[in-house]
Amino acid sequence: MSILHTVNKSPLDRTTLKSCLNLAVKGASVLLIEDGVYGAVSGAESTQMVQDAMGDVAVYVLGPDLKARGVDESRLIDGVKVVDYDGFVDLTTDNDTVSAWV
Amino acid sequence: MSNVKKFMYINNKAPYGTIYAWESLEVVLIGAAFDQDVSLMFTGDGVYQLMKGQDTKEVGIKNFSPTYAALGDYDINKIYVEKESLDARGLTVDDLMHLVWEDEDEDWAEKDSIRVVTSAELAEILDQQDVVLSF
Amino acid sequence: MKFGIQVNEGPYTHEASVTAINFVKSAVAKGHEVFRVFFYHDGVNNGTRYATPPQDDINIQQTWSNLAKEHNIDLVICVAAAQRRGLADDGEQERNKLDGNNIMDGFRISGLGQLIEAGIECDRLVVFGD
Picture (tube, helix red, strand yellow):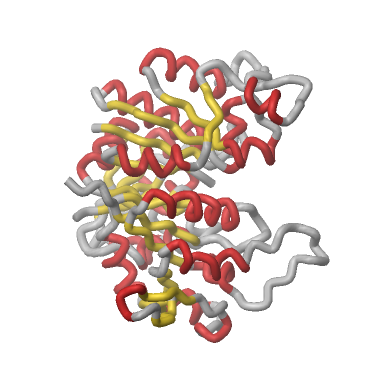
């Protein structure tokens, strides 16, 4: 079994990213969408938490939501992969289950 | 082929401030009729949904907390509460409603429905699900 | 693959509807089937036909309606959530003796069982919310 988690809130506003990372098994994927994309940036309070998790889980970020917010990809934590909506769909089919941290 | 899937309901939000907790429980009750393998998990502020002694009279909205006690009658008895979320809020299982179910295979012995589990245990349980519903 | 989609939030206030629309567009473009979109909580407001957003903005309700027609997608509004929030079709209008109805073409109002059924029938259920 493999699982994709989606997180749509900034980690500086809500704790859903933290909850998600606590409950993500090794090998899980985490996709940051909507305001969740702020969790993908480096130099933020949340950066260390995400970097620590990246040893066990793959972190993706939705490019269109990054662009909408003026967040340049150069600001992303190393190793975070940018996907578009097609990539989002592929992540849901590559994994067996999708868990949304709304 | 068996058409029974593992359904997990994530409860991550506190009650009353928003309607999500109540409308989520409505789905659980309706879903019970479909004979699927149902679990509920309570994480984050979602653990507040299970607090004892809820009284909404003065607020004037529906107190839906008694409904949790009925879940056992619907054969929903896998109610996972994340230990770390309780700890972070200064709560223990004694602060939560006592939810039970009757085990048909053991002469209807009354058993606890709430299982306090660690994040690591809950992560494994979540990983085994077929359908994850969030509200 | 066969997808079920759950939308928990109303249009405009939250991005959830638009993310769901973009996801559905990509999924069908890639050859997947979107079996059903289930609208719950304030998500039922995705199905009102009386929205008249400014012309330079996306018309979310109309977009759903068009997607449903083009790709044969079942758009289901939860009846319990709809009754709380004032969404009605012909049947609801008659049952509750309302003076009109406001549901958008391509949507229908039905029970929560439709969500569970989508979970059972579909290969993936994807939730969009707040």
